[in-house]
Length: 89
View 1 (cartoon, rainbow, N blue to C red):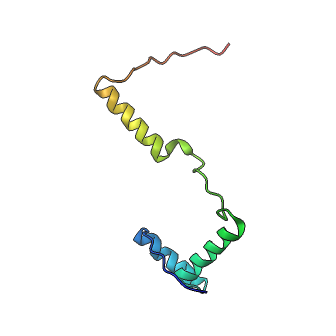
View 2: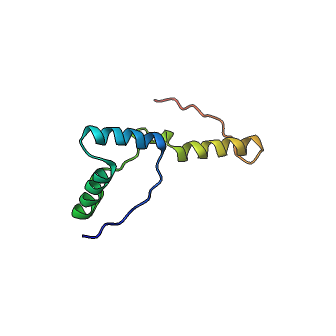
View 3: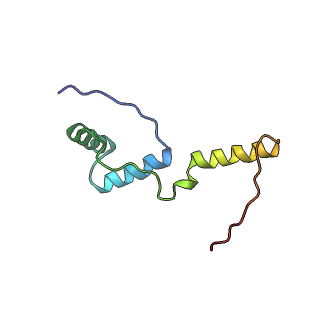
């Protein structure tokens, strides 16, 4: 089987942590990625769940939207509503 190379960019600290863990498992980065790629091909999917954090409100997208809304309000582009309290009867 012919071999080929893959170049990826990854956070340096994350790479160091992964290399340490892989070495604890008795493998190197190449072996770990090969295992991952083989699982993806075999299962025809990412072999683990990819999900939003449980508290999705504080994700980066929402935080950016809040910052944009605050900036709009400060320059008079937003609409400010009064809080109306309703009695629970």
